[in-house]
Length: 265
Ligand SMILES: [Zn+2]
Image 1 (cartoon, rainbow, N blue to C red):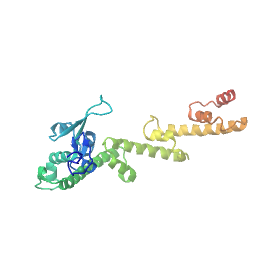
Image 2: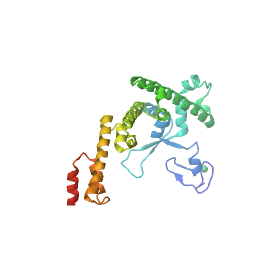
Image 3: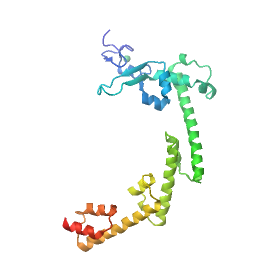
Image 4: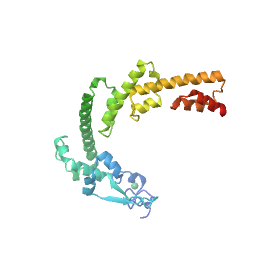
């Protein structure tokens, strides 16, 4: 019968050119037909290259309709991907999750999802333990007590995808602490949110914290100079705001030159 969903019989359905079946929206999104792309499989099910080679189930190759030169995209039925993932980790399911006697080729979708959830949770715990071990090593290296780390930092570390980011997050914390203490000592802590401070904390600037403090001091001196310049020469404040700001943020320290420049403009 034409125009009927091949799964549920719903009327007025176009053919789906990827799955090559007439399927309504509901059926397309159902467990049976839900498709997943390679990058999501890598992210959720941690497939490596070998897994994609060994994968025994149907793969669907799709041309990019907007760009004929683009790579052909490969799509997979997620229900198959789940099965493969469970099969691959069968030892863990039996020995670590203590789930016995499952025949992965013969269990229903609901059970697959329950086991899958436990399995992903197990991997998450393994990964978090690994992160804590790495963190402890880094803290030992810098002689930092774990109790002194703020909660947000621990949370960020547990949420980060890449293990090598842990070192960066700790380094960032050390730089921020270091800079804040120094600024506070000189009553400059209100300037911790300046761009230059952020860039320093993020590790984009290859300078020491005292150099940041010096730069902030110079900036404040220049601000005072500008104030005086405006007052003494009766300059309009708004008209030249761009020049004033440029002067404050530049390496140019010659206020007389700025005045000359303004007078010539
Ligand atoms: Zn349907």
